[in-house]
Length: 412
Image (cartoon, rainbow, N blue to C red; front, side):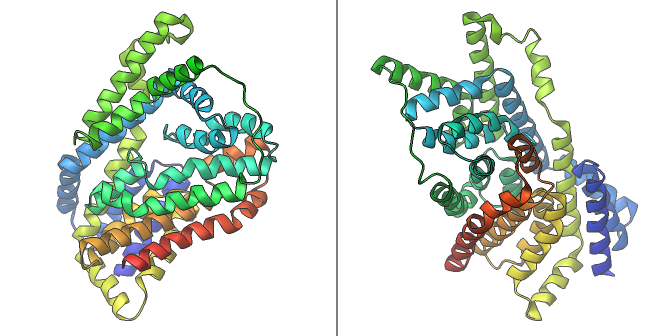
């Protein structure tokens, strides 16, 4: 009955998500079904729900994710990120370096399908480097998503750290070689042989002016990060400071040029930036975690599987493929597998390694899914077929995944 309950719970969740139901509502439904099929009554389910929405972890995570979406929205609406990238190219004096970094910087906006925003930049820079469209599409996607493993404002990384109950920076340090590998291999495969076009000469004064512009327009992100790293502030406090910095920059820009004025109340703009579906998703994810933890039989079952000789790595790989590929999302893999697999770890270090294996495997199947929205939009923009993209991934993704496996077994 336990296997059937797990299967039905996951199947119903996947079905609802595929029908475009918010993943939060889908996971809430899946968790209720899992609880009912394992003998938990309505009163216990209600207790789990109240526990979920009132616990400090859920509240802090929901506030943090909500503020991240506000920051991303303001930086988009105020044209802050666009000007940050223009200043960056002047500083780097290299089209190749800019095309490598620009998608990653645009990726900090953390919006669904946000890769479309960096397509025109990659397209323009790619034309100057004579890059074919299939390579442009690959560059846009690879360099945008490499930050996925280490960016501390990523909702997925924050979610992983909260559900896994481990230190965010421990997880980021462990995954740093994966992100580095994706950048290095991506550069060698996609950019190494290209010749940088001559850049327009600028004076020393113009160069320092570009540095000042970059510092100014990157400050909302930098403030949000430094508040946590340097002053040990909670993420949501640091993010409020970053949001205030965005508003002040816009007020300064508006005084210089009216074209930057949005002509709407700033609180209305902030409200528009809150992505409520993402907050609901957090509730659903945390409820599923708590439900899995409440069903002790699941951990006993997994332990029995491992005792019978199934490698835990194979269990993770198969599970993430089944969950994340059809949904084109990493979060369900984390929400479902973290509470099942991580309690099996004998110590903190092993728990981090299991988390990395789940996280990277979930990412891989999400990334290559034909339903991956960033991929779909990028292919449409550059008029490229999926098989051309897969051909460019043929060595790049397996080698990067191999780096994760190497880190896993070296550190184990």
